[in-house]
Structures are given as C-alpha cells and as structure tokens.
Length: 203
Image 1 (cartoon, rainbow, N blue to C red):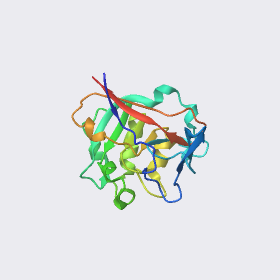
Image 2: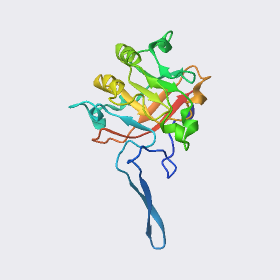
Image 3: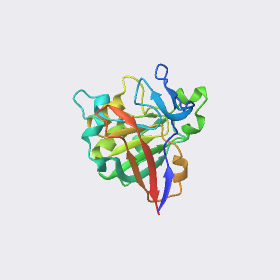
C-alpha cells in the first residue's frame, strides 16, 4: 500500500480566521524542551472535521460516531476552474453510502497569502442536497469553508450527518489515482469538531 498525507502541519504558520489565532508554547524542564502546549480558542484549526452539533442543535458530537464513519472510498472532483461547486460536477460520479467526496481547488497552495481566506469556491445547496441523496459519509475541501454565513450548506450536510473536512492539502496528488481510500480519524472528543490526520491509501 501507498499513502498520501492530506493534512496540514499545525504550526505557527497555520492560517486561522481572525480571533481564532493559537499559540504553541514550549514547556521546559531540566533545561530542555520537554513538550509543547497548544493554546487555541477553537478546535477547528488546521485540517479539521466539523460534527453536526457545530451547526445543528442537538446534533451529534465527534465522539458519538463509530470509527468506520471516518473511513471510506475517495471520490475526487477537480473544481479548480469553478467559482461555485454545483450539481453538474457530480455527473458520472459513482457515489455510494461509503463515499468520501474530496473537492480539489488548489487553494491550499495560497496559504500565507491574503487570498487564501478571501477567495475560494462556494458549494451550492443543490450540490449538498445531491450528496444527501446518496447519503455519502463525508465531504472534504482544501480551502477554509464550503460556504459563507448563514452557512446553508453546513446545515444541509451536518443536518444529515454528512461530516465536513476543511483545510485539506495535497489533493493534487490524487488526480491520477483511480481508486483510493480516505482515512480521516479524529480524536474521540466530545466536541463539535477537531483536528484530524487525514490520509489517502492506494495500491
């Protein structure tokens, strides 16, 4: 088996929304660094996953999902030339209840620039409803958010327990791979989301 890392490294260069900045503080003992402490106002940092309770009152927390929810058949869609991600991009895609749909925009290459948090594709409600129709497991994107306030796409997907992975990277390395498995396990947190180490596995 071969593997591709689909997660950003959590360090001081990681992009965050205003007000969600975090720090990594060295903890020293006996004159050397023993560990580092992460201080963050939100667990939605780096490559992370949104659970239903993030947007849906009474929705599930991350810890309430079985591990197999976070593992599935990858379906890559190239959206680099699209300002909106609409239902037509799903034509001829074989979606199943085991699918994890990944949207490749290339926006992760803009990390560190003002454009990264300002210019990215918007997923349409029609696209989200089509994912609901096929009851896919998750959707993953390589930009900060699939939609903007009042977050209709978040609410459609999370309302049907389709989890959302944001800020993925290296999706370009999947362009020529026909069959791959996505593994995106988070810690077992009783929270509305959290960081993950996402990988693609293929032969």
